Each structure stands twice: as structure tokens, then as C-alpha cells.
Length: 281
Image 1 (cartoon, rainbow, N blue to C red):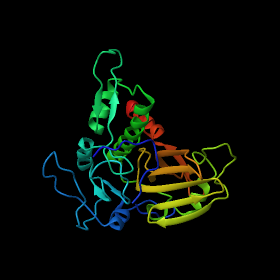
Image 2: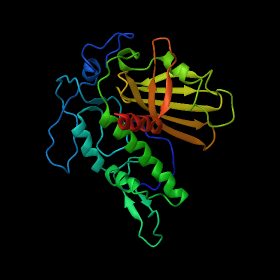
Image 3: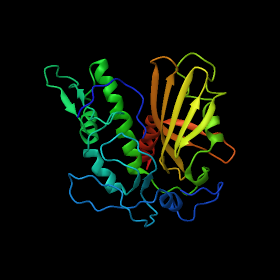
Image 4: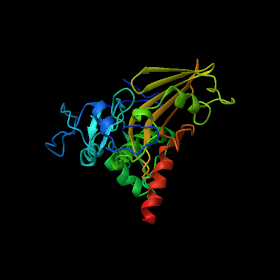
């Protein structure tokens, strides 16, 4: 099934010791998720989390259903397992496949490339193929978010330190986030500064303000930018109440110290930073 959609709201179905060093990286967070590795039967099949409770000191665990790539479910995965998902369809918020048509960068007569997976999207993106129409640009954003998140999950490492209790955000963290970007769609000074914060389910937060609502979904806790600190990969969806304006973001939530306010960094900034670090290395 392929969804014909507009850019809309996503569908949502580490150990923390207050700045102390993590003796067994990610062990507690992996155990909390309660899943581990699975056997890879064939290249065409998707890795899924097993029911075993074996702890791992590497890899990354997804705590919520992110609905961004077919078959990517809550559980723990090693990098090689996540590689399999690059060959799986990118999904929309309604659970259908997303297809983006990319145009050749110089040859206007060349047929468009209809892309369904992150592997193909990255291949054509590296060759400077692009979305020609506004409609395709909207579809392309799904690939930017989903494939960017998959890349960060693939390169994630166990953190040496973290300032997130049990690898999770607190209501105080959410309240601090509400005072800054990207929590604004319409003209307003910090529209969520006085928002009501609620935890709707594990890893899912809701901000309710006078004119806007926001959902924050925690995906996984790990070191996503290579600095040794634990960050939280997450989705942010914001919508104006009574209107159609909405915005979706993927990025990492981070804290530089126990007393530092939690902040959000878009996924593009994190990936660009990692590329720079790799070049220097």
C-alpha cells in the first residue's frame, strides 16, 4: 500500500546516575526495553527484536514505535541489523509506503527515479538528484527524517556519561524545552512557556498551550554525536489548535550538565557535525 498524503502529524502508536560514569554502558536501558538480538535469516528479511533478555553493552534500543521504516519496531538492534532496514520501505504516519520521485540534476530528459528505501534515496541524493515539485519536496522530507534517524541509530554508541535519569526525559526537561525552538509555528513569544505537560505513555509527552499542541516522542537513548554523552533521539510534532498548520522535526535532546536546560538539535545539524568530526579524524 502506498499512501497519498500531505506532510502531517506522525502516527504514534542507558543508565543515568546524575553525571556519574556509566559502568556498564546502556545495560539498564537495554534491560528496560526487554529485548535483544535476532538472527538474520536472509538479506530480504527484516531484523526484529527477540524475546530474549540477554543484556548488551553495544547497539541501541528503541523504546517506542516510530513508524518511519517498515518493520522497525521497539527492541534492541546491533548496527548490522539496522543495516537491513535501509532496504525496507519508508513509511508514512498512516502506515503506508512513501514514494518520492527524484529528478536528474542536469538531464531534464532523464526519467525520474521513484525511490522507496533509504538505500536508494541515499544513492540518488549522493548524485545530487532532487525533488522537482513542492509535492515531491514534501515527500522527500519523510526520507530526510526517516533515513537520517536510521543513520544515527546505526552509528549510535553506548554513552560514557548521561544526565538523563534512566535514559529518559523528565517533566522538568520537557518544561525547559517548551521555552525554546522548535516549539513555535505561529508568531508568538515562547507559546509553550506556560504549557501543560503530561506523560501520555512511556516515552510520549504532550504539551498543551493556548494556541498550539505538541507531541514529543522519545525513540532511543545513546551517544548519537560521538562526544561520549548520552542523548535522546526523538520526534517532535507541533500543531496549531483549530487549524491545519503543523510541523514535524527529528533530532536529539541533550543536556551538557546536570543543571543545564535540555535542548533540541535538528537531525541535520547532528549528522553534519559527525561528518566534520570524521573528516578531522
